[in-house]
Structures are given as C-alpha cells and as structure tokens.
Image 1: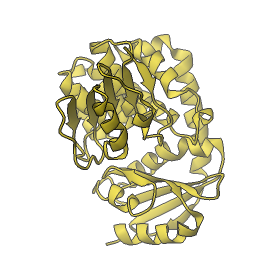
Image 2: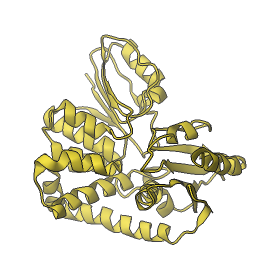
Image 3: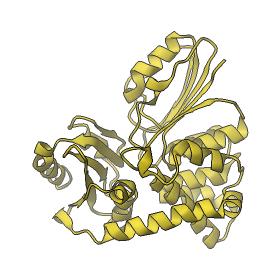
Length: 320
C-alpha cells in the first residue's frame, strides 16, 4: 500500500513534515515541488487504505484532488493556514486549518504534537516570516540570542530554496532537502553535520539578495512599493525572501515584487504591511492564478497587459 506525504516546497512545508515524521515515522511517497507548485493532490493516485498527509497548500486549490482521494477510500490528514473555502465533511478527512495572519503550518503541527520538535517549528515559523510568533514559541528552548539567530537564518535559507519557476532554478530539490533535514530531530544537529549544505544555501541567499538590493522600485508611494526583477534564475530564487525583507524593513508599507517570466508575464509576490497583515490574498485573488493568505500572497502568471492594472489596483488597495 502506497502512502503519500504532500507538502509545500518552502520552509513551512518542509519543517511541518519534519516535525510530523520525526514524531510519527512513515514510509510515504513524497509529493512536492517549487513553492508556487500548489496543486499537489493532482499528483496523488491514492487507493483504499492509503494514508495521505497534506501540509501547507490551500484546500481550496486542491479540492478536486482531495475529493478524488477521499472517494478512493484513502484517509487524509490536512493541515494548512491558507484560504480553504468550504471543507468537505467526510469521516476519512481530518483537518487542522487556521488562516489567521500570525499562524503557519509549522505552528499548527507544533501544537498538534504538543511541542515535541519545537526547534523545527521555530525554523519553519521564521521561514514563513512570522518573527514575533517564532520568538514567542521559542522561549521554552531557552537558547541564547545567537543560537536563535541561527534558527532564523536556517528558516530563511530553506524558504529561499523553494522559490523558482522550476526545480532547475533551486539549489536543492525540496524533496531532497526534506530528506537531508528530516534525518535530524534537532535543527542544530543538521547545521553542524550538514555544514556544507547550510553553506550552499547561505552563500546562494547572500549573493541573490545582494543582486536584488541593487534594484530600484518600479513604483513607490507612501503606502506601497513595487519592484521589478529580471527573467533570471537568481531573481526567481530570491523573489519571496526579498519580499519578506522589504516588508521587515518597511513595516508600514505594502510591497509587491514582480519577476519577469519567459512568456512575457509576471510572477508576483505581495506582502501586506507588517503593522496591518491583511488583504494580500483578497488583492491577488482579483487576478487569474492569484491566491495566498492575508499577510502574504501572489499571482503565478500575471499577463503583461495587466501589469498597469495590477500596480494601480495594488496602490489603491493599500492606499485606502
């Protein structure tokens, strides 16, 4: 019987599954991809008796795949913090879903496991740019500030690794990176033993962020700023973490990072102001292929002809 672990390829998805499988080991087929590859249940061929775990991808975006898995007789555990829509009622479906702006999947799994692998929850929460939430749950660890900074950096680097238009853009395929980190119950042990892997991520992150930091805004006013990145692998890798960095540096302002795609359209990352973490999903869902959560959302393929409309809508939405 084949079981499936389905998870987002970012830090939150990887760290949520790392916690879960350290607590509940299971041989399962890994279903993941780049950060924006979220219709992951379409890749699952579940059968009666299959156990399907789904982490950190929107139920609303995976509704068809979920219903197919349930109709096959599979049992599904679904944990997420994105917009879900109507949740099906089925005795084989267990859900743990909370779309609050200060919650992520790693936090939900940490609570589900009663803090059994808290340090990995801290990594995943930092990776999802929920700094206050990460610091709050980290208190029982009792680690020095420099050690906490190390967990924050690891979360940022794992998250950075998930962005790209395809797997070839990434330093590590998310499934491979999951296998590397999940071998450790404690992230500090991964950092020590996997120093070469940590340094690969750190070097790539620093180089790509330096390139992004040299860019000037395409649009900027008191309430919003939009940046345009080129159609280059470094730009695709850095788009999400650069958005987070902008948000942290200017907490009163909303930010959009648009990356030119090979088809002439744009990949869009939106971050709501940190002092008012709401509306990013509402804004992005006004455009085809848009979605996400209140604090952070995106558009997978904004047509070139809608660029001006998006920037105007973005500026008006957060300039209210």
